[in-house]
Amino acid sequence: MRCVVCDAVLAGKARRYCSKPCFRTARAASERARRQAAPDVIRAQQRNAKLVKTYGLTDADFERLLAEQGGGCAICRRPETKVRLGVPLPLCVDHDHATGAVRGLLCRACNVGLGAFEDNTAALVAAAAYLRGAP
Image (tube, rainbow, N blue to C red):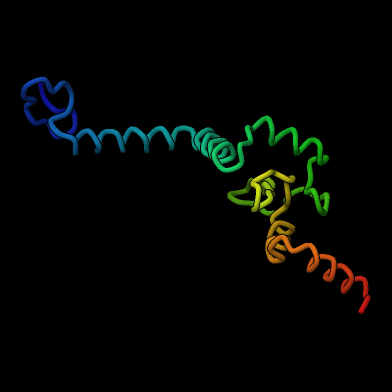
């Protein structure tokens, strides 16, 4: 028998590959083909895995939160406006940095704005008063 990657003669118990580098080369090609065949599926799987690992949220939890918020941001109530590759990006998961508890879903603009205040509620109140014109 011969290696399916480099065509070398297989020795001993080897069945398809002559070495680990040949196995890795074949595996990488297989993964590349899988990603190219169904990029949307792969992207969704990666997003779901990240949600579970980072926030403990399943895709169903995310969709439930989104429905509870009326399909928009928890702060401005608008849907996400940022687009990548012609597709609107999902809302950001907002969480308490001290406890890790999920608070809601935010558009990118509100998430960046809130992040700039570093969870300092006094600074947020002062900013709101400033916007209303109070000294």
